[in-house]
Image (cartoon, rainbow, N blue to C red; front, side):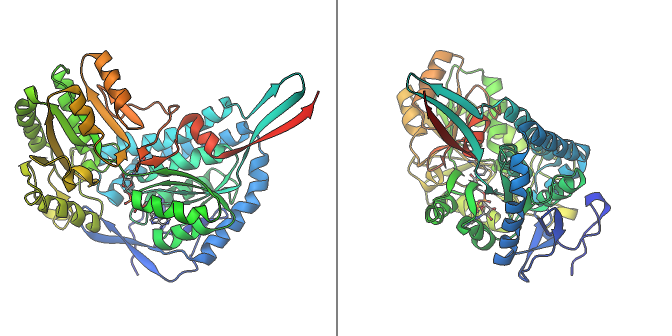
Length: 492
Ligand code: NAD
């Protein structure tokens, strides 16, 4: 039995438990999974792979809580969401430390991005829900039509390991404010801050059963949620192949689906851009979180006239990134999030030569001294010379491997940008905003940033085209997803 360091509210813990009916309880399953610290390669915890009895228990608890929760006013629910936000905020440092340990991301990132954004997700949807039009009328000479939106019932939220609490709460908050009760499953690879969220909910008095958190593998626990007859909707973020499987399974019970999936995001860099601004942002958009953000730029398309200069300058910047122990505040570049993912990223670097490419920066795994000597670190890597149809330019690597291609004309840049099955996000770099808008309109992606990256207004629709997504999250779209419309018609 593993004894964990005491982190969460001074509780002694041996394994991560499910949070059902307002309590952390043992799973019915005896199948356990180890939880690794990717920066050290060491095991520091365990969870159980929840089984059908666990899921049924969570569904019963959520169904019972639905009567009470859906009956509250939006304002009353908003008070609970704001309390959860405050509960996380109070322990921001502790959450940030755990998120960094669970994923290998630099603590500076979890402190500045992951946890503040998780807090904001609850605050934002509390306020946005209060301003949302749940009911409206459409009247004419013959009829009065009262249209109202009501919650779906019990819904499931399934999230990935790259931004664990950030994406978990991005789904949970809109589901709750609209009056649904939730069963949420974090990634089995980074479950710890979700466990802590359960503690916060308990502490701030969220009614039992309103939010239930179950742990386990996607193929077991996750699939049980997708198959469950009582679950009305699935909000999923993760890989495209998983999304495809979920949509096949969920269609049998006609569940509502929101799928946020993979990407292969282009950055189009024109000669007339603000060069320094572009360079700083390309470094960030390519290698933040070790390239493990779905919105990261992974294909850099550069106007031929500045290709050589850009290649030189970016390579220099990449070589200066401080790779190190994620728990140290000065670290800029941490570890890859799991051994399996490390092997996948290395396999793509290994295929550079046979795909006709050349590594121009990085390209090796990194052996650090001391505490992190067995961690899963890979240098930030730049590759050039690949054909647009090569596997490295077509498949999502989701790591610190970025390709460079050059273009001569605007239309060539657009063709290259659209030349994958994905369509999540893109960036365009030019001082000519007319050109920026013209190009953006022709790019198949759900989010396009001109002269910036990851600038988010949470009211805007978020999601992907093609194999990157189905539906939109954020703002009104999320509230619409988690509600069903009803028209009550009366003759006049
Ligand atoms: P994944 O698809 O392996 O897992 C995501 C979640 O789904 C996990 O909780 C997992 O346990 C669960 N799951 C896996 N198989 C399942 C099944 N059969 N039924 C139900 N649930 C199942 O993805 P990942 O490796 O955790 O995350 C990386 C992927 O997520 C990348 O492709 C990345 O682009 C994508 N992502 C997309 C966005 C976006 O907003 N579009 C954001 C972040 C990450």
